[in-house]
Length: 221
Image (cartoon, rainbow, N blue to C red; front, side, top):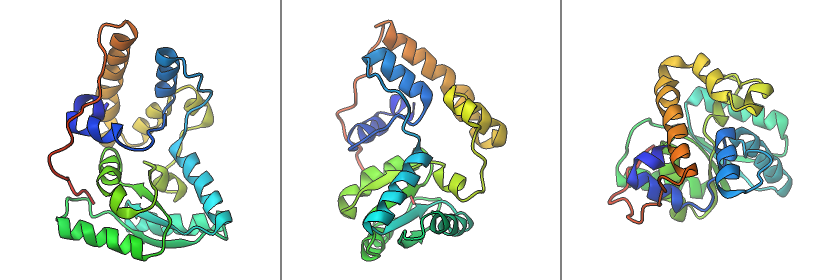
């Protein structure tokens, strides 16, 4: 929805290597609009665990970037309990602000120098997608934006029950857990998403990705 409402972000999203259907309503829309036949969504927290398992098996160090220090501390402990062979090359919490070009370059240099081969980014939407778009070429390694996975796997935020996830009701559970932070996202964007989907399904309107790149980096951190 951020990409649908923001031309610059539309360009960023459509110039990443992979955009995955993290939510069930997105999977349903893809199946209805494009007959993709997707049988399940690609859930960020599950994807993160599968990649950690593969990284541990292949001896590929990972880096955890974003969130708060207490989240990263708990996340490291729980990941290493679950994957004893997993190598965590480094971690860095978010500064929750924009930084200078020099500061952003220093962050990238530190990640590269850590020896990591894969970066998980947990800055929240849309900051994490902006960060991946702006820094992927300088990183020289895959960067995976995984949303709330850091909080979930650190054990600090509850996940929706499986039955709610399957039925596309995870948003309702998360809204009940964090109403002050998430009310705008869900109560405003959900109806707008349905409206935009209906326009496209009925062929009243099409949504063409922007061809104009952002004029300058945002340097989120």
